[in-house]
Amino acid sequence: MLCLCGSWSGSRVYLPPINKTLKSNHQRKIIIHSYSIRKSNCSASASSASISMDAPAQQQSTTSFDFLTNKPYDPPSWASHLRPVPSHFFSLGHFPTPIHKWNLPNLPKDTQVWLKRDDLSGMQLSGNKVRKLEFLLADAVAQGADCIVTIGGIQSNHCRATAVAAKYLNLDCYLILRTSKALVDKDPGLTGNLLVERLVGAHIDLVSKEEYAKVGSLALTNILKEKLLKEGRRPYVIPVGGSNSLGTWGYIEAIKEVEQQLQKGTDKVGFDDIVVACGSGGTIAGLSLGSWLSELKAKVHAFSVCDDPDYFYDYAQGLLDGLQAGVSSRDIVNIHNAKGLGYAMNTTEELNFVKEIAETTGVVLDPVYSGKAAYGMMKEIGDNPSKWEGRKVLFIHTGGLLGLFDKAEQMASLVGNWRKMDINESIPRKDGTGKMF
Image (cartoon, rainbow, N blue to C red):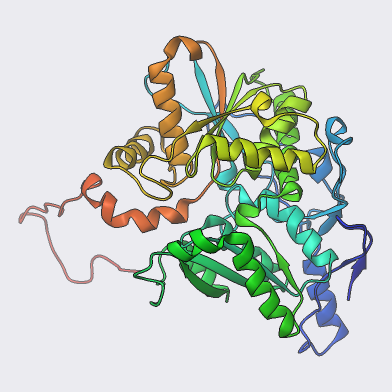
């Protein structure tokens, strides 16, 4: 095994064993070298309003082949008093993600909305979960895990990202997916996130929503963990959404990234507010704590897509206490209820909003997280325009595009702009003229 020093728990870090079928040292060197590929810079937005995308100093390296390397972690100076501080992280995402102006319609006078594109943090690994997984999987490898266990909804972006990231690091992945009682005994299909999860070989256990509600995610993951331990495996459990105190560091680091982008940008923009979807609590805990501790001092507004604000205030408080932050969640984040019909359920109005935003701005929102958050933000701005007048808002796009495929039937009537092309009979025709590649 390739051994590096340090971990979240202070033990040694071991990269997973190299494929035993390799026949030469040369082949083994190639595989080991693949662990030293690191984050590439995302290109800047085509918009003239884009902010500089240079990589943060903490993420720069002497080599351009940095992706998937396990690197020592140096926290922002303003967060160095938090405990415990992770010692390492795996580079899984393409950071920094771009920031550009978002030309939303019907904004109050002098109000600007900017968009941070965490949906562009990768393709298979896109979205906000990547930032958390960088720290969580470094800890898993440090503890000598050979497989990952996590849990979520049937179209969980977190579960898909975890399955891909685990396979990158030669770890097996076991997913517990919540579905309806009528479908729990049936093949879950290949729509959206499920297709990627099954392509990368994730093991899937289905549980009904009713059983999930009665047993709970902690007990369910523990049942699977104990089963794997009896089989001689070394499982590492990641909670729903990757939202624990360790995962919170992903969005503490994201605030550092935003600060550095603002410092290097030419637009001299400062943000008064940060808006983001909230589905498990880790992202809002990291963003609000980072903004409060740093010089950014932007007011964080979270739009919850499940449960209720009181639940997330309490859950975020637990994450903050786990870092010895010494601050109340209610003092650093405002949580709004945006769940509507319920988690992963949408009204026609919400889906039409997603379609209209894509049509007017080119930005595709997922209907489960960022779509509901943006819908809630625009409703809040419309109801209280004077409160938002003149403010500069940073909206965090947390990804989830694959979840849109699960809404195809519901959206079909909203996107009917197609027709058969009319080709006049007078147009010359000759077989073989058009080459079909």
